[in-house]
Structures are given as structure tokens and as C-alpha cells.
Image (cartoon, rainbow, N blue to C red; front, side):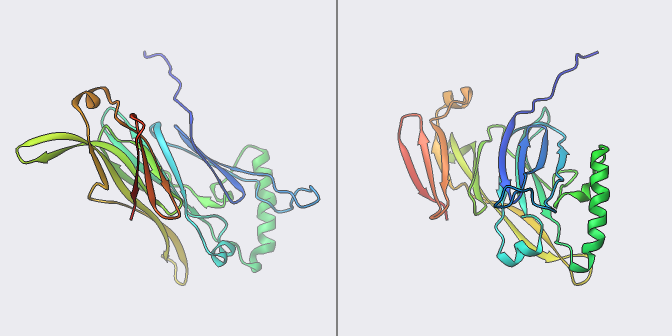
Length: 261
């Protein structure tokens, strides 16, 4: 019998989304409500007291969170913002980036206010007894990834901006004539969210999309020693959201600035 081993559970990403704190750990995704107070320091009545918890199948090594912006009208109509979570997962069989979608639930209509108060009181009693329904949270969590992308074993350094544009780094082979040599490549992607018609008539729902760009947005030649030891000259990178620029920092101290169109 194999000895019991604890699953890794380090924090990979944290974001504040409205009145909830979204925590992404290696083995699970957790949504925690934050206390709400008025200007006199009194607790706000009716503020959400419910969160959500999702255990992922395989522990992740890296994660990023994209909170999609909404208009004022949309914020009033929905309890939460659409959120895309990307987790880089490595197993014995595969190397993947898995996408999880947190989709907001609509705000209840005035006609259901009285009924919702009764349901909320029932939910509070259930929560005190240790039972929590998934419908208590302001958004839905998928039971499995909504999209899985197979990547190179060298994939690392997930970077994303507020507008949903991002990239990761991986090592590829580039053919030049009769020669082939390794390059460090930046693979770009676009994460977006939009309203689409739902199955029910006269209703809509949010849909999160992820498109990976076919052509590498940046490639730099690396030596065979860098590939074997996985110690690359390109160490870090970041995105400047306002003008769409990518800053790349190398081990030699050089900094390059690129336009991310």
C-alpha cells in the first residue's frame, strides 16, 4: 500500500471580484464573501454571506484569473462578473492548460423579492448546519474544465492583461533551410466574454471564449544547454494594458519592449 501523500495546495492567484475574494489554489477554486459595512461601520443587511468551492481533478502548477469588464447596466442586471480561470496542469500523461468559467447569475426581479427573502433565511439555516447549496453563490462553477488545450512540456509563465489578451512561453523547434534549432516562443491568446441567447426563450446567458493564436508572437533562439537545463535567457515578461505593450526581461539584464496587437 502506498503511503498517504498530501496534495499540494499553494495559492496560485487571488482576485477581488465585487464583494467576493476569488482564491485559486493548486487543488481547488474558492469564492469567499467579504464583509460589507456602511459609512457608520454597521453590517449591510442583505449582503451575500455565501461562497463556493470547486475541487479540481489534478493539482495545477500555475494559474491566472481574467475578470471581464461589464457596463453599468450589466452590473445592475447580474450578481457577478464573468470570470475566466486558466490553470496549467502537468500529469504523467499530458501537459495542458485548462479553462474554468465562472458565469454570473442574474439579479432577481422585484416580484420575487419576498420569496427570495424566505429562501435566504432557509439557506442561512442550512449554512449553519453545514449544508450549502450551489445556487447560494452569485455565479456558477463548472464541475469540469470547459476547455482543455494541450501544450508543450516546456510551457510556463502564464501572463494576462485586464483586456483578456495574454500569452505563455514554450520551447519550439524552428526550421531554417536544412537546419533546425530551438527557440523560446511566446504563444498569444485572447480571452473574451459575451452575452448569447439561452435555451429558454427571451433570456440570455454569458459565454466565455478562449482563442489561441496560431502564429507565435515572439521567438528568440536559445542554446541546447538552456533547453536541457530549462534555464532560459528570457526570465520574465509583463503586459502593459493601456497601450498593449509587452516587456521582456532577460538574464543578461536586457529589456525588450514589443507591441501586442
